[in-house]
Image (cartoon, rainbow, N blue to C red):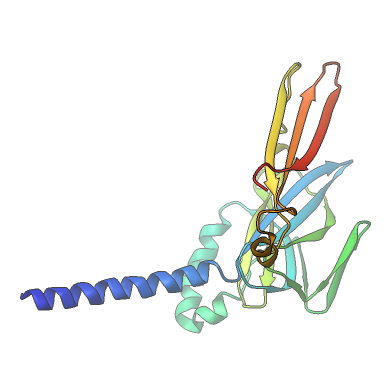
Amino acid sequence: MSWTTALAVFGASTGAVGVAWQVWSHWLTGGRVQVLALRERRDDRWAISTSVINVGRQDVTVLGYTLWLDRGGMRWKRFKWKVRMLRRFGLAHVRRILLTLPPSLSFTGEACLRDEQGSVRFPTVLRAGSTLRMPHIMLDWSSNRNLRPRVAIHLGSGKIVQGEVLSADAFEPMDIEADYRVHADFEVDVRSDEQIREANGTGGGPIRVSTSVRNRGTDQVHVSTHIEPSDAA
């Protein structure tokens, strides 16, 4: 192989890799949604709270919400079923199907969920970088460990984002011992790019925010916040 041919092959390969990376990056930063679902014991029932976070750069449409109790071993059974259906109906149809077992709740189309803190009406648009809090749903089930609550968010693109409902106790709080202090120090700049260019280093610069949490003993926790102009301004 001559050097000319080798360079041509190398250029074509790097070009293909570059295009593939751009397509992959565009997909990753597009409409991407994450789901965080927690359960908290209230009297004899569980309060299910779900947050939907749009971590992409594009707005997404939320069409519906599903909550159900999943049984052990169902993931493998769903996978085998979808493989069989994939050959018969194609990916576009199979990806819009959510297999659940009773008991289950599903809200799609022209539906509205409401609790004491607010309401959500479907379909709704979730802006890029924003979070949608679903109203609480009270659920009661036996202590059978084979039953695990799961949630699913139905998007306008046909994608279904699922997540397991985690126990709120899994997020253990930070214990601050006596005479121990937690300190955070950061800068916030609320100016636009145009204001920064026109400031010429005078006035309106970033501000420094300092927050400290100190345990003074006997369950007394002191929190202080201090705001001042940054030295970088």
